[in-house]
Image (tube, rainbow, N blue to C red; front, side, top):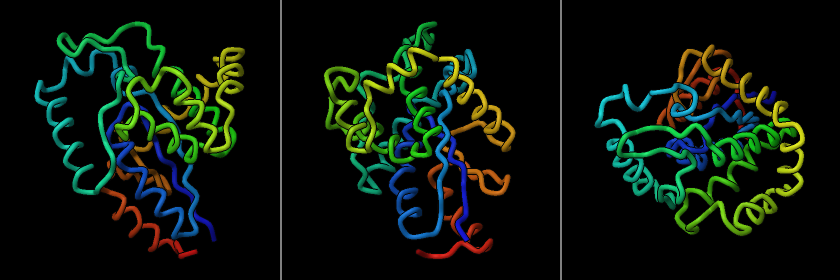
Amino acid sequence: MTLTVDLFYSFRSPYSYLALPKTLGLVKDYDLDVNLRPVYPLAVRVPGFFKKANPQFARYVVRDSTRVAEYQNIPFRFPRPDPIVQDMTTLEVAAEQPYIHRLTRLGAMAQLEGRSLAFTLAIARVLWDGSVAGWNEGDHLARAAETAGFDLAAMDAAISADADRYERVIAENEKDHAASGHWGVPTFVFENEPFFGQDRIDLLLWRMQGKGLTKR
């Protein structure tokens, strides 16, 4: 019997990106469906979050995510530009967020089509693997989307025509994410039990095996 797990994902989160290789490994090796559900980053979901957080928080995330990538041999560099428009000196988050709104709505569209994991993997590599400077320019995203079977221009047009439809999907994702018992990303939810962080995938696998997960 195929098991299903939700994955609440942010396109700005380094740990969300770092969770993708193991997640893909699970899908490849086990009779498992992963329903990737994009949510907005904390910087957008929780106004003032970074101003209230310990000043060492952001610095530690940079250091830790970089060494996790090195340890796991995952190509990694923080996106250029940052998907969030934010002054990292004052930590002020801009009211207009063109990058993260576009990325998250695109992810929501892929979710509605039942192919959000494939889409997100393709797009996330462009942002995070260090091979592209200016991921938002030229045809970087279009070519990445095409490798996953998506027409980016058609997706952008559909979203422009009815942005509210995709905002409702994101809002529902965020509601269910909060109801799961955690607020961070990546959070996997299996049978209403949350597993937060890319370092909890092995624990998630153990739980699912106890519930009958089988190899392909």
